[in-house]
Length: 276
Image 1 (cartoon, rainbow, N blue to C red):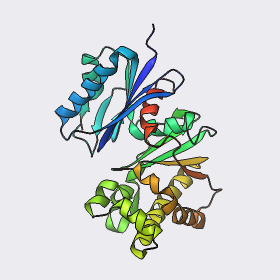
Image 2: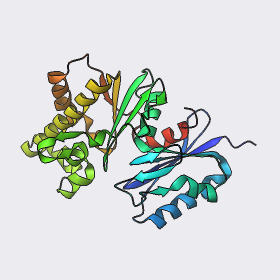
Image 3: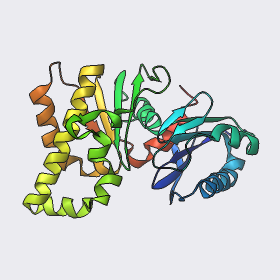
Image 4: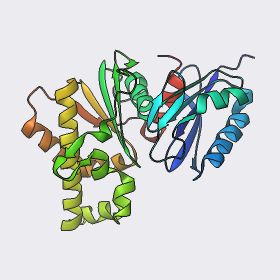
């Protein structure tokens, strides 16, 4: 029997996800494990899991946060993982004799949403993920747009230039958690109409709205899809986000919505790299 399944890997700063996807882009298996803290243990985890699935797969797609050269699989910079300046593709190909593709994780997310998720009816798609950091992706006519090679670093658009802060500085989960914010408690408190919590979500939506506004004026997309763990609280920050966008937008508004594939978009998109 031919092995037709693809193993998708979404390597994150906090968790790493593995998914087995068939030829019809259906997710058959999915698991999430904590990402180890050092390079050697991360590599060991990847090799161990790939070998576990190897009997059932013909290809491997991997999404990685940070600045990744999708052509040669070299990770140039990844702030939330100890893998900067590392040729992961070359290393894995020496160990695993299967076709492997490596791509920025949010490019994978955006591709999945554009092909089978919230943006499947659209041709010009922006993806924006809110997680440990803030990531971005661009898909035009169902193809990832790389620019000169590294387009889509939307988390590093400067929102607060007076204090030299970019979108990731202001909204990245790593930063907010260091400042003592607990999303679940803030969500519960917001439902109880506690002022501090309501103001937190209002501010988050407002800042994110300016980020989306910049993307709208730059790319004029048909749709912006938001993903990442923070989007489970979409209904709490969306009202202030859309209010900010509507107030300042100079062009027709695109649809702004959350991911349909939720936490599985990254692994599915990594598999879909072989269809682009």
